[in-house]
Image (cartoon, rainbow, N blue to C red; front, side, top):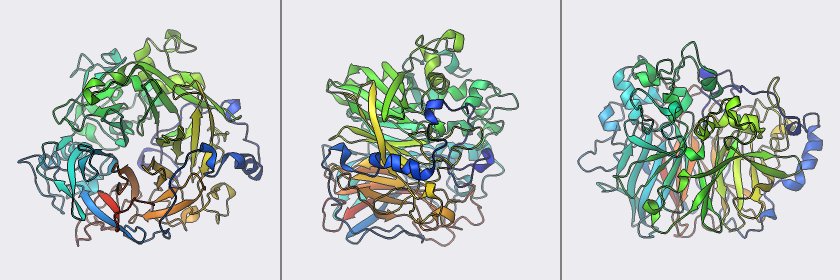
Length: 637
């Protein structure tokens, strides 16, 4: 879920995306076959592949709730018969014994307080059942970024060492214990599981790039230990019981100075950083420490059941602006990890492990994601796709083309994918896997730059120019999840049928939506879709009728999309996790009251939203919300 940090790029404000400019602009001819086609002709061609039809062959649950209208107020709204409870907001102590400072609504909590409190801007989240329970478990959660106008009493500037430390402590991961008591969920505090992972937490680096010269720094000459994880976005739970999270727009934290090398340029590094950490923490000054940036952009793995375990950066999965990572198992129990990077004109990846998952949970599989093959996707116009291996020495991935070894291929995964001719996508965000049908789904949130002069044009997988609304693509592997090819189509093209611009109308059966982002299947087979239109989009132009960001359910058998939840003003709806029985749904409301620049005025902290506390003079807070059916039934049924 990248944000429209307009100070960092000349992006269209109707797009809440990409923090970098595209360096490789020339489209491949096979990906521009629709360039000259009229929109009506294109829609006719796509119709057989589109619209939530029953092509998957799965037997999902049916929509059993009353849909709600679009939301335009500063409130969280769910259907009749449902109860939404705010469970865990920014600043709540996670529950470490003896370290539970209360949240102060005037932002006067110290950096040390923030290191043991929930961080800012909740995003990817997973419920880990304790002993198989649906009423007692752990929540592992990441904190994507900070709004320093809200985090500090006097706002972003001037940036001081104390502010940088507090901002760094508001990033990272959290683990906290929860339990259903009567009709209310509660955080269990203190808890032996409670944990905060911040920018001061050591991470082990494993896989082919571990120890690589491009990962070595003055502080870590071995290139095997990195302090912290940042800008973490989506998440997933592995079959062996660990938490995976992607490091997304990490490039915004680094200042490249006036002479940025081409490698860093390809990853969107700018002369000045967005968060200004480099003014106080020299490791974010890439002109002085050029390899530090290479140590971010990885998928990280954490064992939430062991608060003493060392989190890991898995380099075999490749370096990217990772939205997240999602795991399937082949029939012989090899791990297949799908991921995309939330950036305009970037790629979708698949990793296939060499080894097989073993019984015994996290410890028995601690090296499973360290050895295997990484692939990048190419979507061809005939509805067939190919996985192209990112393997050193194969095809153009040679020393002559700037790849000394496999470690460098993984560190420079974008450059390698450029050379292989992979398909440049419209911001691949969340993925999810239908366990029944084995289809894999991916949200492509938007790309207003598609078709602009000097940028890639439309193609079969990304069929709309000035794509403000986004789409959901899906594919079925040939044979098993490790297949070398796949068939693909569009689940839906998002939009509002009342829009005057045909490319923004979409083809949804049911309730309109724009900018699909979070996504996941419930235990009963319903597909849930969350949206992330930016504050600059809402209530105007093509988004005038769509309203606040929302969550919808899709019955993939009938094709209906129905609105289930709308969020408060200018928030994003994200995070998606169910208890095993499907009776409790956890979601996150991120950055309520977000401003167009993501820099709140400290004198007007609740200018746009006062959710969830509605406290005079207080601050809006990102929060985890749990949703239950009043009669105790399965959510959505």
